[in-house]
Image (cartoon, rainbow, N blue to C red):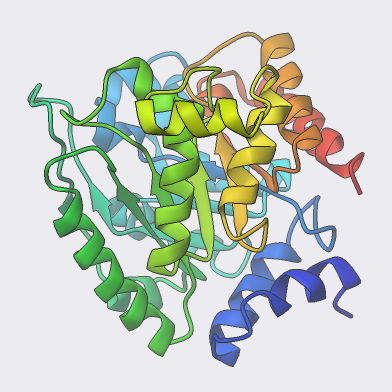
Length: 307
Protein backbone atom coordinates (compact mmCIF):
# COMPACT_ATOMS: atom_id res chain seq x y z
CA UNK A 1 0.00 0.00 0.00
CA UNK A 2 1.34 3.44 -0.95
CA UNK A 3 1.99 5.68 2.04
CA UNK A 4 0.45 9.13 2.43
CA UNK A 5 3.92 10.68 2.08
CA UNK A 6 4.47 9.02 -1.30
CA UNK A 7 0.92 9.79 -2.46
CA UNK A 8 1.47 13.46 -1.66
CA UNK A 9 4.69 13.55 -3.69
CA UNK A 10 3.19 11.69 -6.66
CA UNK A 11 0.34 14.19 -6.73
CA UNK A 12 2.87 16.92 -7.56
CA UNK A 13 3.56 15.11 -10.83
CA UNK A 14 -0.06 14.69 -11.91
CA UNK A 15 0.67 15.81 -15.48
CA UNK A 16 2.79 12.71 -16.01
CA UNK A 17 1.64 9.33 -17.27
CA UNK A 18 1.13 6.18 -15.24
CA UNK A 19 4.52 4.77 -16.18
CA UNK A 20 6.39 7.79 -14.82
CA UNK A 21 4.35 7.78 -11.62
CA UNK A 22 4.87 4.02 -11.20
CA UNK A 23 8.64 4.35 -11.51
CA UNK A 24 8.74 7.32 -9.12
CA UNK A 25 6.74 5.17 -6.72
CA UNK A 26 9.20 2.29 -7.12
CA UNK A 27 12.06 4.64 -6.32
CA UNK A 28 10.33 6.08 -3.26
CA UNK A 29 9.23 2.67 -2.00
CA UNK A 30 12.56 0.85 -2.17
CA UNK A 31 15.18 0.28 0.49
CA UNK A 32 15.60 1.50 4.03
CA UNK A 33 13.72 4.78 3.45
CA UNK A 34 10.79 3.17 1.62
CA UNK A 35 7.51 5.00 2.02
CA UNK A 36 8.64 8.08 3.94
CA UNK A 37 9.21 10.42 0.99
CA UNK A 38 13.01 10.56 1.42
CA UNK A 39 15.80 8.92 -0.56
CA UNK A 40 19.48 8.11 -0.53
CA UNK A 41 20.97 7.23 -3.92
CA UNK A 42 24.44 5.81 -4.67
CA UNK A 43 25.91 7.53 -7.77
CA UNK A 44 29.08 6.17 -9.38
CA UNK A 45 29.95 8.22 -12.45
CA UNK A 46 33.28 9.37 -11.01
CA UNK A 47 35.35 6.84 -12.98
CA UNK A 48 34.29 8.59 -16.18
CA UNK A 49 34.32 12.10 -14.74
CA UNK A 50 37.55 12.03 -12.68
CA UNK A 51 39.46 8.93 -13.78
CA UNK A 52 39.85 5.44 -12.31
CA UNK A 53 42.70 6.02 -9.83
CA UNK A 54 41.20 9.19 -8.37
CA UNK A 55 37.90 7.41 -7.98
CA UNK A 56 38.72 3.85 -6.96
CA UNK A 57 42.31 3.61 -5.64
CA UNK A 58 41.20 4.57 -2.08
CA UNK A 59 39.09 1.37 -2.10
CA UNK A 60 40.22 -0.90 -4.95
CA UNK A 61 37.06 -3.02 -4.72
CA UNK A 62 35.41 -0.10 -6.53
CA UNK A 63 37.19 -0.88 -9.80
CA UNK A 64 34.67 -3.74 -10.21
CA UNK A 65 31.17 -2.54 -11.26
CA UNK A 66 29.65 -5.45 -9.29
CA UNK A 67 30.84 -3.81 -6.08
CA UNK A 68 28.65 -0.74 -6.44
CA UNK A 69 25.50 -2.73 -7.17
CA UNK A 70 26.08 -4.87 -4.10
CA UNK A 71 26.95 -1.83 -1.94
CA UNK A 72 23.73 -0.06 -2.91
CA UNK A 73 21.80 -3.24 -2.22
CA UNK A 74 23.40 -4.01 1.16
CA UNK A 75 23.12 -0.40 2.34
CA UNK A 76 19.42 -0.21 1.45
CA UNK A 77 19.77 2.69 -1.01
CA UNK A 78 16.71 3.77 -2.98
CA UNK A 79 18.67 3.45 -6.24
CA UNK A 80 22.06 3.12 -7.91
CA UNK A 81 23.03 5.58 -10.69
CA UNK A 82 25.85 5.06 -13.19
CA UNK A 83 26.83 5.51 -16.87
CA UNK A 84 26.07 2.97 -19.57
CA UNK A 85 29.18 0.77 -19.36
CA UNK A 86 29.01 0.15 -15.63
CA UNK A 87 25.34 -0.80 -15.76
CA UNK A 88 25.85 -3.07 -18.77
CA UNK A 89 28.70 -4.86 -17.00
CA UNK A 90 26.70 -5.98 -13.98
CA UNK A 91 22.96 -5.32 -14.31
CA UNK A 92 22.22 -8.93 -15.29
CA UNK A 93 23.58 -10.17 -11.96
CA UNK A 94 21.38 -7.85 -9.92
CA UNK A 95 18.26 -7.70 -12.10
CA UNK A 96 15.26 -6.47 -10.12
CA UNK A 97 17.18 -6.17 -6.84
CA UNK A 98 17.93 -2.44 -6.81
CA UNK A 99 16.40 0.37 -8.92
CA UNK A 100 18.80 1.68 -11.56
CA UNK A 101 19.26 5.17 -12.98
CA UNK A 102 21.14 5.37 -16.29
CA UNK A 103 23.15 8.59 -16.55
CA UNK A 104 22.86 9.68 -20.17
CA UNK A 105 25.65 12.26 -20.39
CA UNK A 106 29.18 12.48 -19.09
CA UNK A 107 32.42 14.39 -19.52
CA UNK A 108 36.02 13.67 -18.58
CA UNK A 109 38.64 15.79 -16.83
CA UNK A 110 41.36 15.47 -19.47
CA UNK A 111 40.91 19.03 -20.69
CA UNK A 112 40.77 22.15 -18.58
CA UNK A 113 38.39 24.27 -20.66
CA UNK A 114 36.28 26.76 -18.76
CA UNK A 115 32.94 25.85 -20.35
CA UNK A 116 31.93 22.20 -19.93
CA UNK A 117 29.61 20.44 -22.35
CA UNK A 118 29.12 16.74 -21.59
CA UNK A 119 28.68 14.19 -24.36
CA UNK A 120 25.50 12.16 -24.57
CA UNK A 121 26.75 8.67 -23.73
CA UNK A 122 23.54 6.65 -23.42
CA UNK A 123 19.94 6.62 -24.63
CA UNK A 124 16.42 6.17 -23.35
CA UNK A 125 16.37 2.84 -25.23
CA UNK A 126 19.46 1.78 -23.28
CA UNK A 127 17.66 2.65 -20.03
CA UNK A 128 14.69 0.49 -21.00
CA UNK A 129 16.92 -2.38 -22.15
CA UNK A 130 18.77 -2.37 -18.82
CA UNK A 131 15.57 -2.21 -16.75
CA UNK A 132 16.33 1.24 -15.34
CA UNK A 133 13.57 3.12 -13.54
CA UNK A 134 14.86 6.58 -14.53
CA UNK A 135 17.37 8.46 -16.66
CA UNK A 136 19.91 10.96 -15.36
CA UNK A 137 21.43 14.00 -17.06
CA UNK A 138 23.85 16.77 -16.02
CA UNK A 139 23.40 20.44 -16.87
CA UNK A 140 26.00 23.15 -16.26
CA UNK A 141 24.24 26.50 -15.84
CA UNK A 142 26.93 29.13 -16.32
CA UNK A 143 28.60 27.35 -19.24
CA UNK A 144 28.45 29.00 -22.65
CA UNK A 145 27.07 25.66 -23.88
CA UNK A 146 24.19 25.62 -21.39
CA UNK A 147 21.45 26.27 -23.95
CA UNK A 148 22.49 23.21 -25.97
CA UNK A 149 22.35 21.14 -22.78
CA UNK A 150 18.90 22.50 -21.97
CA UNK A 151 17.61 21.66 -25.45
CA UNK A 152 19.09 18.16 -25.39
CA UNK A 153 17.67 17.56 -21.92
CA UNK A 154 14.22 18.73 -22.89
CA UNK A 155 14.17 16.27 -25.80
CA UNK A 156 15.40 13.40 -23.61
CA UNK A 157 12.82 14.18 -20.90
CA UNK A 158 10.04 14.12 -23.51
CA UNK A 159 11.29 10.82 -24.93
CA UNK A 160 11.66 9.29 -21.47
CA UNK A 161 8.19 10.42 -20.38
CA UNK A 162 6.67 8.78 -23.45
CA UNK A 163 7.97 5.40 -22.25
CA UNK A 164 7.24 5.97 -18.58
CA UNK A 165 10.68 6.97 -17.24
CA UNK A 166 11.24 9.94 -14.91
CA UNK A 167 14.38 12.09 -15.11
CA UNK A 168 16.97 12.96 -12.47
CA UNK A 169 18.90 16.15 -13.28
CA UNK A 170 22.36 16.82 -11.89
CA UNK A 171 22.30 20.66 -11.79
CA UNK A 172 25.89 21.84 -11.36
CA UNK A 173 26.48 25.54 -12.08
CA UNK A 174 29.90 25.85 -13.73
CA UNK A 175 31.58 27.75 -16.54
CA UNK A 176 32.94 31.09 -17.67
CA UNK A 177 29.76 32.85 -16.56
CA UNK A 178 30.52 32.15 -12.89
CA UNK A 179 33.32 32.57 -10.40
CA UNK A 180 34.63 29.43 -8.71
CA UNK A 181 32.95 30.49 -5.46
CA UNK A 182 29.78 31.23 -7.41
CA UNK A 183 29.37 27.58 -8.42
CA UNK A 184 27.93 26.82 -4.98
CA UNK A 185 26.53 30.26 -4.14
CA UNK A 186 23.07 30.04 -2.63
CA UNK A 187 21.47 32.23 -5.31
CA UNK A 188 23.09 30.26 -8.13
CA UNK A 189 22.24 26.82 -6.73
CA UNK A 190 18.64 27.94 -6.22
CA UNK A 191 18.59 29.26 -9.80
CA UNK A 192 19.89 25.92 -11.08
CA UNK A 193 17.12 24.11 -9.18
CA UNK A 194 14.52 26.42 -10.73
CA UNK A 195 15.92 25.87 -14.24
CA UNK A 196 15.83 22.10 -13.73
CA UNK A 197 12.23 22.20 -12.54
CA UNK A 198 11.23 24.37 -15.50
CA UNK A 199 12.84 21.90 -17.91
CA UNK A 200 10.70 19.08 -16.49
CA UNK A 201 13.06 17.32 -14.07
CA UNK A 202 11.33 14.99 -11.65
CA UNK A 203 14.26 14.83 -9.23
CA UNK A 204 16.89 17.57 -8.94
CA UNK A 205 20.38 16.97 -7.59
CA UNK A 206 22.39 19.99 -6.45
CA UNK A 207 25.40 20.65 -4.25
CA UNK A 208 24.87 22.00 -0.73
CA UNK A 209 24.85 25.79 -1.17
CA UNK A 210 27.39 28.05 0.53
CA UNK A 211 26.66 31.33 2.32
CA UNK A 212 27.68 33.44 -0.67
CA UNK A 213 25.66 35.36 -3.26
CA UNK A 214 27.19 35.55 -6.73
CA UNK A 215 24.85 37.83 -8.68
CA UNK A 216 24.63 41.50 -7.79
CA UNK A 217 20.98 41.66 -8.81
CA UNK A 218 20.15 38.71 -6.58
CA UNK A 219 22.12 40.15 -3.66
CA UNK A 220 19.86 43.22 -3.63
CA UNK A 221 16.75 41.02 -3.44
CA UNK A 222 18.17 38.74 -0.74
CA UNK A 223 18.95 41.81 1.37
CA UNK A 224 15.68 43.64 0.68
CA UNK A 225 13.50 40.66 1.53
CA UNK A 226 15.71 39.37 4.36
CA UNK A 227 16.15 35.90 2.89
CA UNK A 228 18.12 33.97 5.54
CA UNK A 229 21.35 32.30 4.39
CA UNK A 230 23.44 32.01 7.54
CA UNK A 231 22.98 28.28 8.16
CA UNK A 232 23.05 25.42 5.68
CA UNK A 233 19.48 24.57 6.74
CA UNK A 234 18.43 28.11 5.76
CA UNK A 235 20.08 27.77 2.37
CA UNK A 236 18.68 24.29 1.72
CA UNK A 237 15.23 25.63 2.57
CA UNK A 238 15.62 28.39 -0.04
CA UNK A 239 16.82 25.96 -2.71
CA UNK A 240 13.90 23.59 -2.06
CA UNK A 241 11.49 26.55 -2.13
CA UNK A 242 12.99 27.55 -5.49
CA UNK A 243 11.95 24.19 -6.99
CA UNK A 244 8.24 25.02 -7.20
CA UNK A 245 7.76 25.70 -3.49
CA UNK A 246 9.08 22.25 -2.63
CA UNK A 247 6.83 20.44 -5.12
CA UNK A 248 9.81 18.90 -6.89
CA UNK A 249 12.13 16.41 -5.20
CA UNK A 250 15.47 18.09 -4.44
CA UNK A 251 18.37 15.99 -3.17
CA UNK A 252 21.87 17.09 -2.25
CA UNK A 253 25.24 15.65 -3.24
CA UNK A 254 27.88 14.54 -0.79
CA UNK A 255 30.78 16.18 -2.65
CA UNK A 256 34.43 15.44 -1.97
CA UNK A 257 35.43 12.87 0.63
CA UNK A 258 35.31 14.23 4.18
CA UNK A 259 35.13 13.00 7.75
CA UNK A 260 32.16 11.06 9.09
CA UNK A 261 31.20 13.72 11.65
CA UNK A 262 31.27 16.45 8.99
CA UNK A 263 29.09 14.38 6.69
CA UNK A 264 26.50 13.63 9.34
CA UNK A 265 26.42 17.25 10.51
CA UNK A 266 25.77 18.33 6.92
CA UNK A 267 23.04 15.70 6.49
CA UNK A 268 21.27 16.96 9.61
CA UNK A 269 21.24 20.47 8.16
CA UNK A 270 19.87 19.16 4.85
CA UNK A 271 17.13 17.33 6.78
CA UNK A 272 16.32 20.42 8.84
CA UNK A 273 16.09 22.53 5.69
CA UNK A 274 13.54 20.20 4.12
CA UNK A 275 15.83 18.41 1.67
CA UNK A 276 14.41 15.17 0.30
CA UNK A 277 17.61 13.21 0.68
CA UNK A 278 21.19 12.68 -0.38
CA UNK A 279 23.05 11.29 -3.36
CA UNK A 280 26.38 10.15 -1.96
CA UNK A 281 29.16 8.69 -4.10
CA UNK A 282 32.79 9.20 -3.08
CA UNK A 283 31.92 9.58 0.58
CA UNK A 284 30.56 6.03 0.50
CA UNK A 285 32.32 3.88 -2.10
CA UNK A 286 35.82 5.20 -1.31
CA UNK A 287 35.50 3.86 2.23
CA UNK A 288 35.92 0.19 3.21
CA UNK A 289 32.66 -1.65 2.65
CA UNK A 290 31.63 -2.08 6.29
CA UNK A 291 32.39 1.56 7.01
CA UNK A 292 30.45 2.66 3.94
CA UNK A 293 27.39 0.61 4.90
CA UNK A 294 27.54 1.97 8.46
CA UNK A 295 27.82 5.56 7.23
CA UNK A 296 24.92 5.19 4.80
CA UNK A 297 22.84 3.64 7.59
CA UNK A 298 23.52 6.66 9.80
CA UNK A 299 22.61 9.01 6.94
CA UNK A 300 19.33 7.18 6.38
CA UNK A 301 18.53 7.24 10.08
CA UNK A 302 18.90 11.02 10.06
CA UNK A 303 16.39 11.33 7.23
CA UNK A 304 14.10 8.86 8.99
CA UNK A 305 14.06 11.12 12.03
CA UNK A 306 12.40 13.86 9.97
CA UNK A 307 9.42 11.61 9.24
